[in-house]
Length: 206
Ligand SMILES: Nc1ccccc1C(=O)C[C@H](N)C(=O)O
Ligand SMILES: [Zn+2]
Ligand SMILES: [Zn+2]
Image (cartoon, rainbow, N blue to C red; front, side):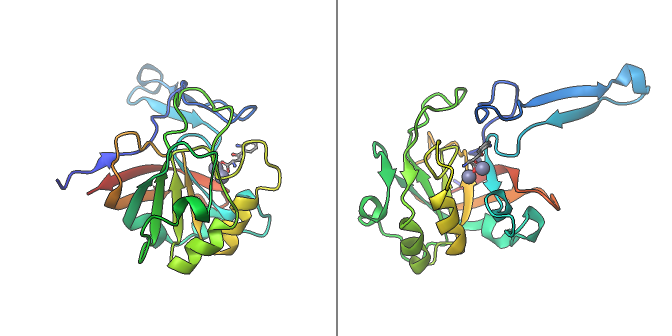
């Protein structure tokens, strides 16, 4: 008890990338031999790769950028719930689970089986879940999936409904070995001033 566990996807060239989006790359751009002192690396990636948060600017031109988001959303108590085998998750699917007093909700679906391959289809969040969760006090929702909407959605109804109810989005978690229950979460975004999202190192402690 009391040790932090990593619930983040490793970032290397094998990480699954949204179809058509920028591949991940890391390279030593200035080697120790060249610089005379140090290896200096460079990363290139889409922000929506691996474990990351969405800022509202991702889906709303008037929405907040990463730097404007309240850090307190991404640190603190979180409840993990297990909802496997659904094609979508809405009030009906979640209403049997006690969420009273929960600020941060992490949903383990186990639906993204091989995380090295971008999924064909995922369970999505039903937009009406946003109002239900915000009524309970939820401010952050995290999933073990690359999106909260269907992968082919252009309207991104769940993204918009969550944002309009003050619920922030954390995607691409690794919850394979995480049992339902209460934890401490840290999943801090980088201080990216203009960005539409940020990779995070997400960790949990019982
Ligand atoms: N990277 C993309 C490239 C093209 C189109 C969508 C995406 C997304 O990332 C959308 C997804 N719903 C997301 O928020 O992570
Ligand atoms: Zn995203
Ligand atoms: Zn998203």
